[in-house]
Length: 435
Image (cartoon, rainbow, N blue to C red):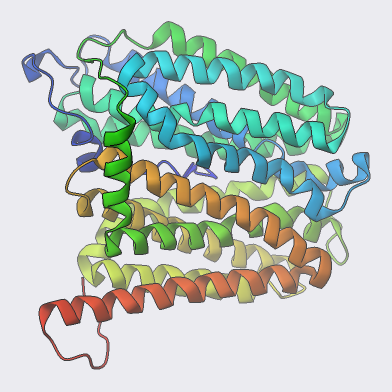
């Protein structure tokens, strides 16, 4: 996600992924290197897995107005088709990370994709909204096995100097999947309806899943572990007891609340007057995700210049400016608002998610899984609350929810600055932008 996703959500830095599992017993030289045997196959396989994951996860988001019309439900009701999928992923990403320790990364990823694409082929035949929501929840839970296992597989099988590019390609797959899934469904649905559109995404995901399984090299450095719930619970408890990690989890959830709400409801806003856009053009709006890919890639430079908290303030401010600009009744200004919202969200998400790996001193895989859980809980909350606010107060209601979430990010970041000053024994005065 992060993906991409809105694609973006699986963003982890290489240092976090590399330390998520112990170094293999074998010589590091036996791991895959750029241009070496199996490296291109592995990279392309995980790219396709990322495409399938986020195309399926958000396949109904651009189609909500059509789903509302076909099933005779409100925007807030239809939004559950998105919230159920992201909520299922949020609930199961931690258990899936534990299963991958026991049964292997490739096995869990293969099983997850197999279940998810099977459900994806059933989604077009859902006879009612409750059935559709239930299928989407199962699909999201199945997809949790991908972010829980992919980075651990890369850390075990790829040499450290090749890890950044390998993870970057997987994240790129998330972004491409999240974006293309929405764009494809928008244009297909305009001609043949939402059921055919999600069916096409299901078939695309099947092709990606088959190619993934054929291309992904068998693991050579995985060592099975035992399922030890007590150890997992203790690690999770330790992470949740860390004030900085708690703040980062909350920031990720709040940023995604804004993003999930805006992109769940934007289709309804653009189908109404004064815009009255056709479904195909509404789906193409998601090309704005490309802006997020750029802003996420510059997050490292922002942190080096402004510090982590300064970069978060900038991301929050950019997102808030975009929200307010999107209130204008002119399409160019609305699109500019979406650009700013997307850029601010991806930058803030990249800063917060990378900080998790740097903050956790042990159990980094679980620390990252907790961040992903919070992130997708925010997506579910944003989809549902944003749609409810739109139903009761129009686009201004959805913007209001987003502004409150951004204020939450600012308050948490300020509290982090104050806590850092107290810990350093410095007087608490005017806040600069500490790192």
